[in-house]
Image 1 (tube, one colour):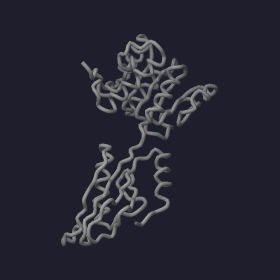
Image 2 (cartoon, rainbow, N blue to C red):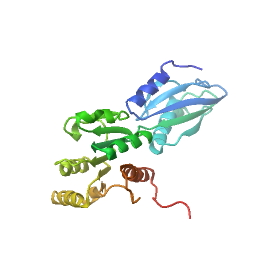
Image 3 (cartoon, rainbow, N blue to C red):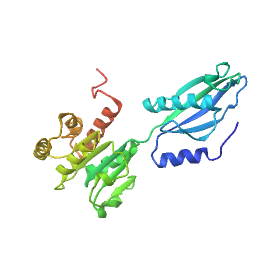
Image 4 (cartoon, rainbow, N blue to C red):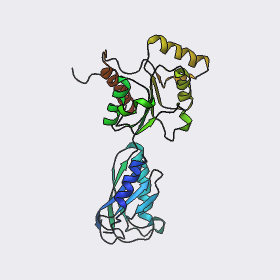
Amino acid sequence: MAFNKNIFQTMNALKEANESFTIATVIIVKGSSSGKTGDKAIFDKNGKRILGWVGGGCVENRVAQTALEALADGKPRIIDVNLESDNMELGIPCGGIMTILVEPHKKAPVLLVRGMGRVVETLAEFGHKLNFRVLVQIPEDEQSRFKNADQIITDPLDLESIDESIDYFILASHYRDDHEQTFSALKAGIPYVAVVASRKKADLILEYLKENDIQEEAMKRFHSPAGLDLNAKSAEEIALSILSEIVMLKNGGSGQILGN
């Protein structure tokens, strides 16, 4: 087994950077093969090997393609690579068969929350527990309330300046520019944009979006009032209803009661 001592450090670095990658491990070898049982390699989000070894070019190409497939649906794969072929297009015939486990490690979905108060605090807490990468924009004197946040923004919010691909954006604030931030988020293509507000404010934001020609397709990504109907009473229940909606959409759930 050819073991690269930096393999796990690299995996940790990719996780810290919130980058998607796959790890390929040779688990069975029959016959002659350049790769040996236990060999590992890391492939990046584009299917390019960045570290390690699982065999020659013919094996690497097959694993690279499988890595992309695994990242697409988040499911691991076990593949057999037949090296007994005499077809030179498949690479140098080694005479063996390798079985390789390809495990995807998808980047954590990024949740941006704007505002202050117990709802925002709970959204950050629950988001952290659900393995989201949590970004919050809050006043500077509120920072101590968000110890689990991955990034805290205290400057005025500028979506274009955030070096992250935002998946979910929740505005739980009463800032004067909430309507403009909602508009910018939808224009930027953020998949889920939610506003926690009274019906009156939600209607005003909706009217502003329509007046500024937000297309119907983009409006499908706008959610206000945010969350599922849990008849939520407390701040914690409101946060739970919002994140329940996000999880439902992320996983393709129905939101229906499972039991009778």
